[in-house]
Image (cartoon, rainbow, N blue to C red; front, side):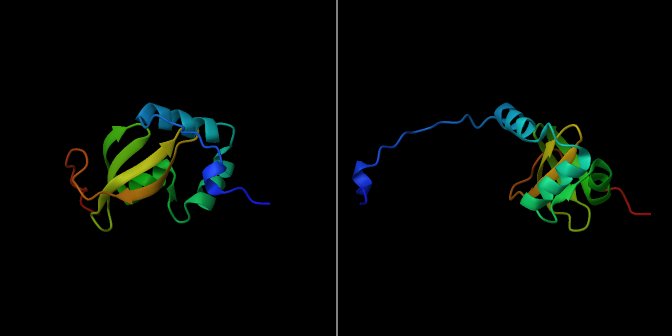
Length: 112
């Protein structure tokens, strides 16, 4: 026996969308993982879209830091966007290009 859609009780849930709430959610989700475990977990969710601190500096120019976001410019394409990050160990993930200019303008240093 099925229940008609109009008879199913529903509730509205509101989650604050501020940066601190998102940072807390990310930290609570991943705080217990070691570096290798954290990277494996993030790469499952964001394939080819996870960077360590040294990899970040190799592929991006950091521009503006607003936890849990880091505004960056990709060195290879010049695309500006943002990354999410978690601490302990610090990992950056989920690069999302932005349509508008994000953060202060920081040119990429010349490649040697």
